Length: 195
Image 1 (cartoon, rainbow, N blue to C red):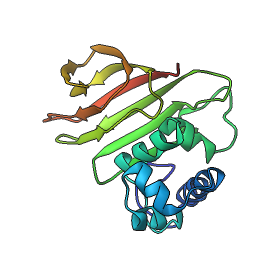
Image 2: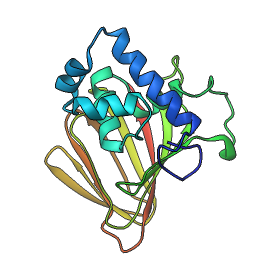
Image 3: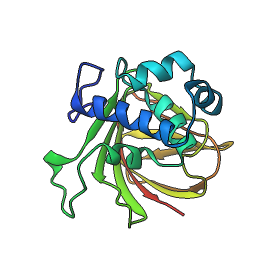
């Protein structure tokens, strides 16, 4: 994870802080790597490498860990950043890239412990397909507004095709999938509201 749009586990301070935070969360619960592997469906060796900062986690892996720890991805990422300011300039917004899936995520308004909503901007390259097995916080509300391009969003068993200007809102209880059919990338805003 990086503060710009590059990816990879190349000694980036955000990657190192994220690795430490994931290890802390596991330790706070008193879980072994084996127990976390069983709860998350992620192999013990992958978890170990992530916690040591040897590899940068993918969106899917972070989604699984967020679900186990009961927090959104923005909450987790905000825990490795400084206390969020009231005003966040575009140049200071955290951008995270998952090179494996073609997903780029910008925390437009980082979450805060006393607030329930946040705004995220996402980009998917043409052909990108990102699936989440379960929500990080069951019952959280999402509003997805497509700014450019097109995206297919599957919520449970229902697939919605959205184009620029369209907005989809739902409460998240089960699996979701975001797919950019192309030929152009898609850019969208997500408003996340915790229950």
